[in-house]
Image (cartoon, rainbow, N blue to C red):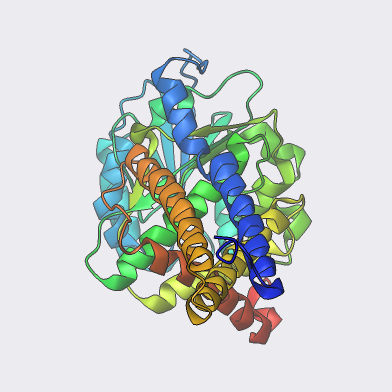
Length: 391
């Protein structure tokens, strides 16, 4: 019995390292990634206060030669069950099809307005210019942002977002998911999107907001003007959503909405390269984030990889030395982390009306994600930096 409970120095170090990494990972899951589920339960028990007022809203959509996306998604925005709102579509492109379609729709929907980004525009990213044009054309203080490839899951989308428009609130962050796809790429992207949302929305719900995603968010017009728009990072192509929110968000002025009626959906990515460019684009702006959340997220990713390394090493040493207590301890550590993950990720997926569940594939996606993140960073390092600057 004494021999079974006697460990050599390497075994002791590996067991201690595995235990410490397991504790750190558990803290992240219970303290950050479980926040969406905790909020959902709080809403069910009516423990969150919402505004009963429904102020007028301006919905701003930027489209770049996306007539098919507009045909597929715009009607779901225009037919929202909301008393007073306008929809402004800023078309960035030179195709007449989008313009013709918007003109046709505006005859039926008088609250639809549209404009375009001049082809001659220079010295500012066209996306930022499009958003700025939309904001300047807006009539109302509350601005809701989405994109042409996004479709609200419900006609209660605006109502659900608007219930967070309390007097002290200036920013509302929502969730955007993917429609179910069949390919392996679609499954991988859907998991990555879910986990990333659990992270940044989880931090916001923990009182430490740091970014927003322009597919589903709202903020006050006065906040945009107070910050002089995007003037702080006009030199960058990106940053119209994450960097702007990172600059203005606080614990007091930001709320999160994750009700199933508040969700918008995108069609599955068409190809790996499109997803890759999106991820590299966010890498290019993440280096400018203020606050510790960026580093805390990096710590979670690092400890995740280290946990797998420590777990494999502990299991291997235990088997090689035929020290089954060590090998068993490795299995127990993996089981605790896997069970915690599976419960939190899958019930959050259910709360967000996601159709997929992650059990057998969870360890694979869990390990692939930080490796992919490292890959995006490498790609960014070897890209010409002017590719991410304004043109």
